[in-house]
Image 1 (cartoon, rainbow, N blue to C red):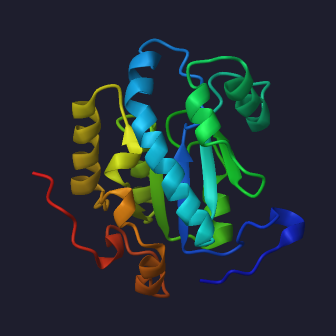
Image 2: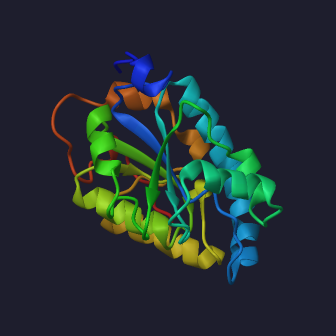
Length: 221
């Protein structure tokens, strides 16, 4: 992996990496219908995401927050973060756990997919990314839509099963099975993701749709 930095543009974040960690809608106030239900499922996943993010940072893997603007068309990402951290909303515990750092990237999305009408494609191309590790909420909604669009763009996908959540566990499990079967996503638990080994297994060349790093996917029944 090329760890060269352009500190003028990107602080200490790496400018080139074949891997990237996408955090989908983790900065979220959960103040919507069934938000309390989703929050209950999301809290354990958020703890796993926090541990995975820390390891990604240590491995110099770029972290990209892909976040809904929740209809706040006059807000930027910093205002959304501040709202979730300071306004006593349901999602405050997750926002505190996963608050972005200065070196993290962010993309605001207007709809379900992180690719729809956003600069995510351009950012990933700039970084040289070919494999996406996608985590966040909800697994059967925005994570699924983003993964679908990533697959159509020939990215290889890792979607750790313990780093997504939906309103109901069976809905999340169904989404994971769909992504594993149709999108060829690797859904191993976060603790089994070895960034060093992933870097070694990547070969130069074009993206290979569905290759999932040549790893055997676990049959989850």
